[in-house]
Length: 507
Image (cartoon, rainbow, N blue to C red; front, side, top):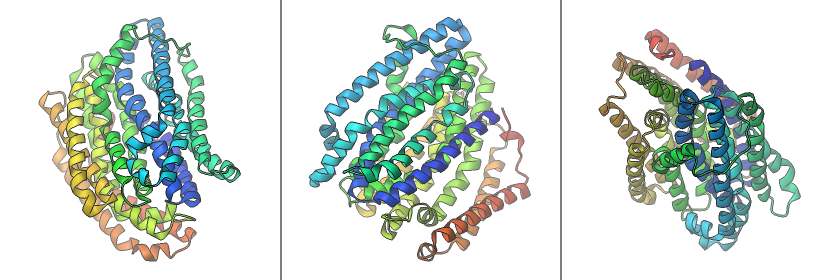
């Protein structure tokens, strides 16, 4: 399982690195002004629905049902389930996209009400949304195909799909934007082209599994009905972080111009370790847990969860600390070009300071939630997700006025910890997860190594003003030097403290 997670991490890291190139191009071209705010809202709405339904509730419901079919049914029945699932999902999402295009002004008013004070920015957001929403059915079908491939043990091709979105958006910003009267419209077109490429890229791998079938609409299919039943509660349980981010977008639309963009760029830096590592483990854990549950092996189920949580702590704690200490240098090195000025770097740094502590919780949720979905329990995460969402709203209303956009990020982090702790408590109380021996020593060693690394980075990174005064090449070289120094110091302390590696091996 570690090898599969590593292959996903390699593919995802390649896509994430290219994603930063994409963001650098967008930041240099559009900065953090009204056009950038309009695009990020127009992109976030369909992207939010993608994560909420296609990659969130749908995947958490589809993979366990498909795993059960693969274990207990004939191959023809598996192909029939795939055909009816893809057809039904495609029909629903095409209809959703059409309705959203027709109702785009209403969606902008609902999800970015603060843009009402700037009619030009609101109108631009509506125009962009009418294009970007067609990304939803394309990328959702791509996610469904990826779920099939993951169930059949093929992880690399689905993990590489974001690369094509990044390539399409970079090409749109560099080549198409200068040729349009409304340059930012090029980004919306690039999003749709990227979604199409993500779907087409996976079809040869789907054919290799024997599941490249003609989609068929079938709400009455028993497997589809089971997936829909599981999806209902799972919408909240698996994607509460996305609901919180969308709520942040609504509130941020009332704040200073640029707030949406500052939150976006800070969130992108948090998404790198989250996407490369946590999602890599979550991708391979869900099919594994589903098989162990179907095979009635509770001991193996518990060991798999324990393995995932140890990796979350081992990677998430130092990553969160490094993001906090290097917030300014990271943002300054990656985005301080062209229209993304010094003020934007300072404002985005405040958001990243608030997002960074939540990284461990964001990662833990990716490992803990599959412990419920693999057992086809979507109601418990739903209740927990609703509680966390309400907490996020309450904390946001308290923090947004004194901290402005950084208060939104802080509330999201705090709500994520509540979500993760409640998920963990539920698994412990039900007896599904029983921690393996050695956790106390493991935590102490990781904490000590993280403290040494944090002190080194804090002493060596310097002030932000000094950092921004350097040339782009100097910033990049210094950042690489301190990232490597942090990794080396963290690893050296772990080795000196003799961290036991047996608990990190494949369960």
